[in-house]
Image 1 (cartoon, helix red, strand yellow):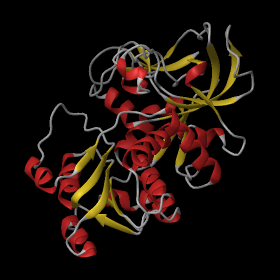
Image 2 (image 1 turned 45 degrees about the vertical axis):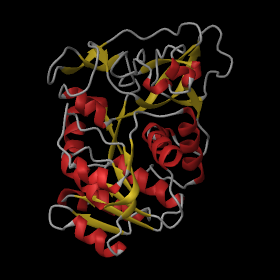
Image 3 (image 1 turned 90 degrees about the vertical axis):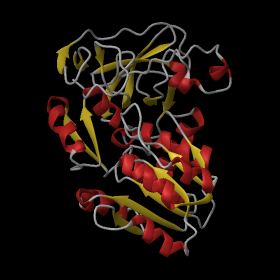
Length: 346
């Protein structure tokens, strides 16, 4: 089968190669992959800015159909539509796993960077990491379930939205737009989305179409701090979602959050260190809730919200062929698309 592989350490070294079709082991399911989403993590791996163990098939945001089940599998059968949590090889024994935090287990080796992933025609996954997909959710939409689960876990489970909250979203990518939709569903009063000039096309149009953006601030041309102070009478935003992973956005998040407010940190910078105004955060006594990946319940919340229509991702995702991966990565880096799925089936 053809697969998109990070061949070795360093910038670049990504290529479509012919790989062996995986065989399901005990308690594993063989999945015929339908679509796999390109994540910011994949772009970081391309540029050697995120841990990975090459050679490795990339991709961790997938949807597909069960092709075959291994010995011991009881909850799935051929033909089931599925998505899966990328928490492979979590030990199940450490204090993190025992406390339900398998997503940050030191032994975890996620598909797509630690072990072979989903930019391929077939993928094996353990039964305990799978979720069935309702017939009301298309396989195209289901391929965006993983970023939806991340936001559900971080914003709704860990941070929370109080009805009427003023919520500021830093970023205009897929995670940011999903966060804005979930904030709206949770009762946010006003949602301000912050981006750049390049975001004022399809990204802003989609955010407005899904009724999750009350105001857009172009941070290249406008003073976000002055705008939020005017909106709130100088108090600041109740919740800030940092989904850009850019140092200026992180600094602005600290400046616009209210005293005792909460910053929901989702974006990765791809850097070892960044410079932030620490004393501003201290003097405001803010809460910064960091996150990595998703929880089981986050997946369940996300899938229910997708099924009900509270979160809409079908038209947000653009489909391209696996052979077009370089163009797809480039479009995302340039802000020319919100989300791109690679069609991986044979």
